[in-house]
Amino acid sequence: QPLVKGLEVTGFDNEEEAISYEKIKADYLPFYLEDALKKEGALFRNGPPFQPFCVVTLSGRLITGQNNFSGSLVGKELVAALQK
Image 1: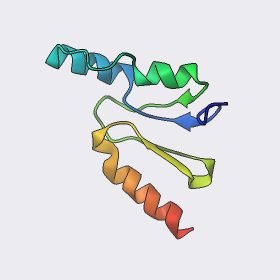
Image 2: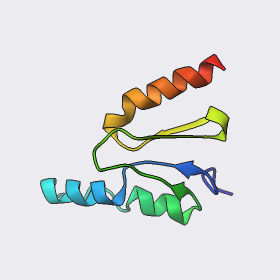
Image 3: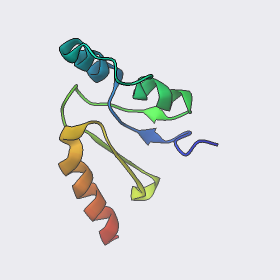
Image 4: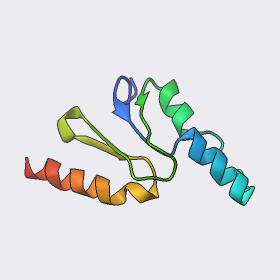
């Protein structure tokens, strides 16, 4: 079964994909990540577009960030998980 099935995760969401597409008018990806994760059974969570957002599941063993602005949040959660 998919790794993400039944787990809370985040990633570049549909709204961010649509905004990006409007800005650059280029369709680089054959799918939207949010839709693909949901199709695999993930419990997709997201924050406001292009704002830092992070989800931690599996008692800190799976750490996902919504976008490139989420790196510092992911890093802090990674350090916290490694210190446990």
